[in-house]
Image (tube, rainbow, N blue to C red):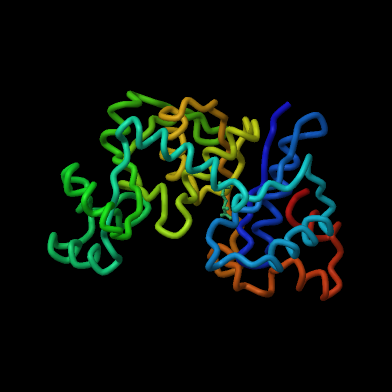
Length: 276
Ligand code: GLU
């Protein structure tokens, strides 16, 4: 039986879209599998402890129980540093000293940003900075993030595929999101790195999440290959849309579980409305 997970970021309360995703992951684990809960709280500027406790309350109200302790990403920074060091050691990362302004200027100079399916990607300015200059700038304390050199990483990993229960077998496109940031200046990690390491360490073998994250899976599959991590199967489910045809956002109060609860909705009604 599979091990699945629900991995909310405590940047707000849960809404119906999250409820769907959580119920989906718990159902796919089934009675014989494991359903894990992970707080993706590395972005200290946006995450709040009261949102994390609110999320636990919302999930409890929905009738969801998870296996084991809640995993908290901000407590695992050392583990992410280790993975980052491994990637640096094999030469697939480079330090990027660009500020947001530098990137905007470069993009304007080349007549617009290179685009992937998910929007503008980093134009690669710092990829060509030579080894000696990199060392000098790092030693002088210049702020930098670490980016994945997607071309070098793709060449090292060779051809890869990932398997999705809805989409079938997909060939990895290493550059689909460009040279993504794997370590931010402030926290030394990023969504892509943390999620990949955590799913592997937790033994998650069926990653269920919304289809808005399909492009990220190319990056995660590549990182698994580079880090020698086990490879799960994915199931990217449809996103729940509001009456306006748009996906819910955390600011859509009307669909927050806490608000629905206060207005007298029962958990059974919410579950039934979502098809569970
Ligand atoms: N923390 C992410 C979110 O709230 C989900 C990450 C994932 O499922 O991989 O959108």
